[in-house]
Image (cartoon, rainbow, N blue to C red; front, side, top):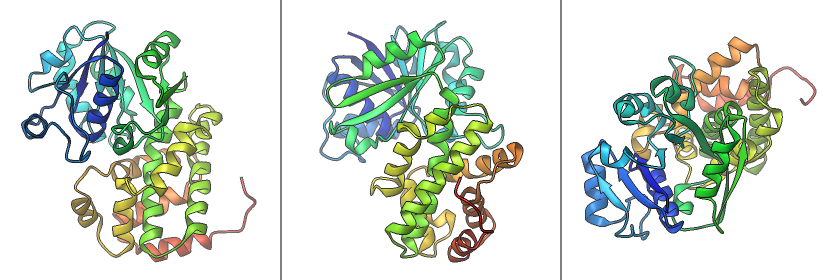
Length: 329
């Protein structure tokens, strides 16, 4: 039996705790937010996963040491804006070569670092990996068949995690392209904002399909320019995750985009969604990286204009449609 600590008590951390509990692991969930742990203790279910009961053998704690020390694996499941602060907070508790798998998606705006790079900088003694793919917490928590990818620089680390997470409803592939996985995971949220904006404007399936296919082309161009493998972006952590995030009713990025398309401001949309809209935090970083590497990313550019420069959503769509004529690439 593996002994696992979940760092973060949001819906995704809770869903993975349920998955690992079904895999006969001993699971402890910790959060720095007392209200999250209290809610789980009192209700034995997460508000975002109604009807999915937490088994009594899952431990809930406000003591970080209890969740971290002597654990075979740590799952870092906090929203991307809080990864660095959380990593700093727990660093002294992490043992040498203790495995941490990051499951949040984003790029830090100030440094342009991916989440795993942040964790490696703040917790250099850890063995860091990532888990990503089309995997909404609402479905994983209920045991709906899902397929994801574990990325790690060392094959033995990826295979170790594959063995722990995989079961009959959660298929796990492995990859060494950690950067590619994380770029796809972060930037698909920005494209999902665009897809939601199109939905909010009342556009249809043609528009959604165009945004998905051209969106993955943009992300892949940047990823390859940065040294990632092109194949990564046409797999589960690229096009797979992009499809589910652009189309699903569970997607907070799509929901926020819909509200913006309907005329609400970015701040109003984020307040109404009541969850961290990670695409908002990755949008500027995506634009900066595109400029730095000389890569054309018109969808990312227009999303930035809508979010941060006050451009109306319908004007942004028209500008995307009326760019210079070119061949598909």
